[in-house]
Length: 196
Image (cartoon, rainbow, N blue to C red; front, top):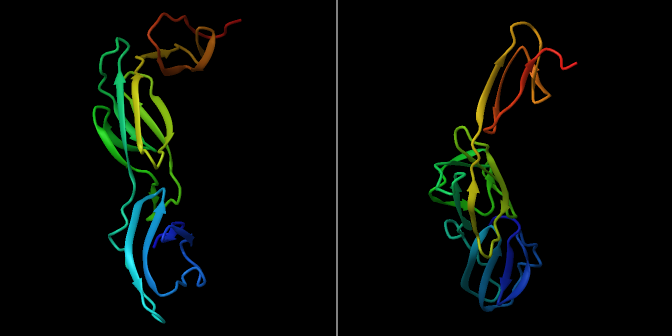
């Protein structure tokens, strides 16, 4: 059994996994065993324990990882649907025009987190400012829907000075001799040298 799962016997909480020796002791009889965790779907099983007997339960393949739905609607500056790409915690997901199933509690190196994971969502489109959103799924209603994520266009400025000198854009130093920089559409004053 994974760690940190609440264990209930007939609606009485007996502890969190792994259970201690005393928490595992139950009188003979029939019971409803229930496991709860924000990271897994609730699991219930009827069990019967006979006097002076020990039972072993295998949950292999029975505990289901709780999954959430992520939907992103990216729009351009005119409010029309934008063809943007999504990545989650640095991993590419695909297009913003789909719904993705995401683990509520992510696994890293084969070990699942015991609490909902904080996710960083990046919405990207060529020649647009990357939009970022942070979220954590609510295990009771694991659905995240980001509506109208506005993609703002950018242009690319390439500036080179004929000699070794500082480069300024609207009075702000942005580099030396040669620079490439993304800028929002507009008019800018570009200068090489010193502003003195």
